[in-house]
Amino acid sequence: MLVSQLEKDYKYCEKIIKKESKSFYFAFSKLPKAKARAVYAIYAFNRMVDDSVDEVDDESTKKKFLAQHKKDLLQMDQVDEPIYRALTDTFSRYKCIKAPYLEQIKGQEMDIYFEQPENLEELEKYSDYVAGSVGRMMLPIIASENKNLESLYPAATDLGVAMQLTNILRDVGEDYRERKRIYLPKNLMEKYHYTEEDLAENKINDSFRELWEHVAYRSEELYKVFFNSVDEFDKDSVKQIHKSAKVYREILAIVREKGYNCLSERQYVPKRRMLLL
Image (cartoon, rainbow, N blue to C red; front, side, top):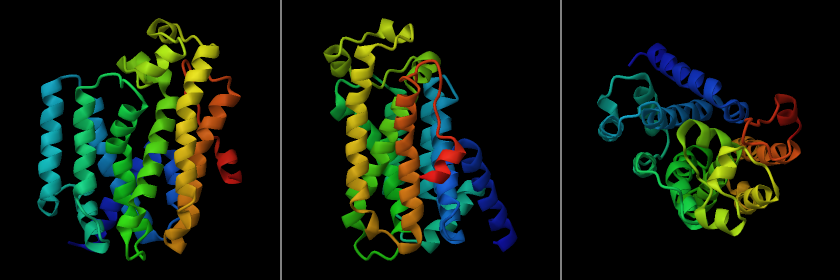
């Protein structure tokens, strides 16, 4: 393959992360070039798989798309598309394995048959598939010098799950309004006396704040576990990983500052504030 073609493929992936996740791009674009490009390829793959479920309504079409992604992943060196060409190159440079990529696809399959989780344990299991898997994908890139990668699987998984819980807490209103999805666990909604009718009315009351904080507390616990292991990652990556986690965790602070309004507005961390973290 011509180097120029591969450059174009990575640029294609970079455009995706730059457009879809300013916080990720802000943190990981500061990695050494080869590592940054690998992260772009990984992100682009995950975005592609996620979009194949989110952007179509027909269940059979979603299943068909995911089956094709699984097939393409298993023979990705034969797939003549930018994301798979970049991903194939990433696999050739780092000790990547396909297991977490297949787990991501399984997580998206779970999303097709989505039911509101009964409890936090179920929510974390789902989050492990769709986000903990991303942490495990990233591990060979950001801990390439660690000879015992498996020892860092829990930390990488915890970060992914913490970020997914943060996503859920940020997008409570949007998920319900656009997809009729409630990711907040049933037993916690019952515990804090917050109903689907309240959610439909964008009601922010003490019940909602207590419910939101219960899940936020778990997310922050997982961030802390990750931060305790961050020094075991590559020296040229530690700062960027730490920055990414801090920026994402800051979303929780922003939601609080905005009076817990994650129902009618989507909160984000302003770039100036990112720079200060």
